[in-house]
Length: 144
Image (cartoon, rainbow, N blue to C red):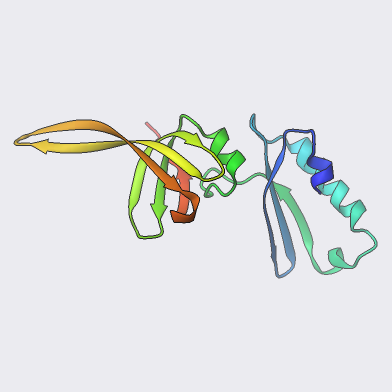
């Protein structure tokens, strides 16, 4: 599968196999096109035609939904500059603008509200989180 994606800009996000279904999620920095999902699906069918995998499983190739968590580094890089919600393994929640991502983790500009008497003051605090400390990261969507 990776040979089909090499050089296209597409990257593999996840492969899930369940009873009766194999789900392959791919993404691209500029978005995923239906034609490319169809092309990968056909490639996988041809590549695995001599196996019996498709006798018992349906194949679905698509992109992760908006509500799905970010799983691989290229997804984080695609979302730089966007607001994300991060849940760490110790139960802490962080919301901020995703400023950087590399193989070790991510950097956020987190907005902190500080109460000074009756006034509230907003401060931007840089937060760095290692991938080993992150349980889940999702893009924060608001519909105003």
